[in-house]
Image (cartoon, rainbow, N blue to C red; front, side):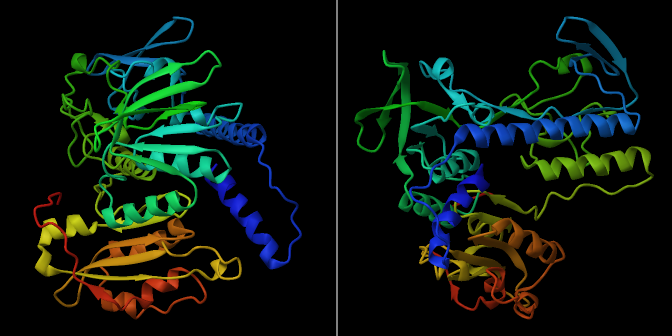
Length: 426
């Protein structure tokens, strides 16, 4: 759906390159949604076929623990199946959560799980939240031409570099997404005409406001799927606040032969690729005579907002908290992608920053890239940073012209940021 939104921009650019594209450009939600849903269904089917080919038994049942070595699974029809094993891996992930304390939230709201399965366009949409899920959803909804509003209680993209996060939201705002900053929803109700009336409090002014929407989308975080597992029967410990499972460096829980990987595990990045790699390494340790552990440092990721934000390593805030302001040097620059020139696109938010130790050889602590194809760019530089690249080594890397990625190896401007030294988060 992010790609669908990007294609809309490309079509608008096409006329600058000599293509005769009819106006106005129309988008068909139903056709897009059907294609996306069919693709996801084909993936599910493909996984089942692969399991069968490898003689892996697959049970479509909802399981919970009976004891340390046994789970009981219940099928849709109610039939129960007992399964016992020497090793058990919990990889149940998480689900989007609803703010159940807000009247009408559950009755009338949707989550990111739902919006991808809508058969009809969500229309004018209120997205509540400031996570990467919230901004990604709001970004592609705006991109396909829908009236979209984001309600943020506090800061966007908490846990990410906040300068980069501000640039992401500034770009979205300048390209049509409306932001309600410092606001919290109080209730949602359905009007006689079927519209949803959302009411919120502006915590800055203290005033109450309201507006009507076709869809209210909650993107306020996720909760791990642990409550129905009967973990206490197996003796598996969880964090009472987050309900996530406590694990060690081997992904083992408080019960040595029960493991947890992915979003359900405490302190792990909520990213699919990290769960996949953790699972592969766990399987190799259990059955392949390997001792390799998952390394959760310098994990690259990308936020697929309209202007993509890729990063690997520490944010500037984290670097300062870990090493002290006086030991950090930041190299940064704005740049203009070549593909933006002929189409006269706004490039005012395309930005790169490299966070380094000031002491030579200036180890690169973090790289942050805002621009087209950020995921592809970040994936490439992630290897170097994982291997302990210094700024000098990055600067000696020959750029590929005329790519956006070459801008990273051309960074030469330095700054000393005025970050609050009390920020913590090493």
